[in-house]
Image 1 (tube, rainbow, N blue to C red):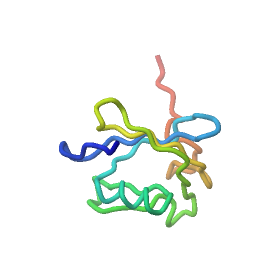
Image 2 (cartoon, rainbow, N blue to C red):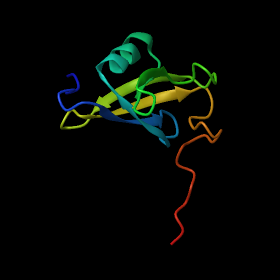
Image 3 (spheres, rainbow, N blue to C red):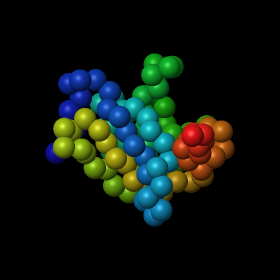
Length: 102
């Protein structure tokens, strides 16, 4: 089964394959999806820069893909990875480190 790119970018949830912690959420287009499959490492589409980016190419915090799963509508990906370091550009392990005060 392949993703449905007819509606544009796919929401991509990246999860640590061991701890199951959600590390980040990013976007994939068809090209970044194909590069991810071919290389075994995550590639995304940057909406702000309007270009492909290889996660960790600059920082060294690469993500090796263990498993990719599609949702029932084929428009959201769950990518389980072995991270080589923090996922967040701030240096935090996960991009989800900020609590919302009630």
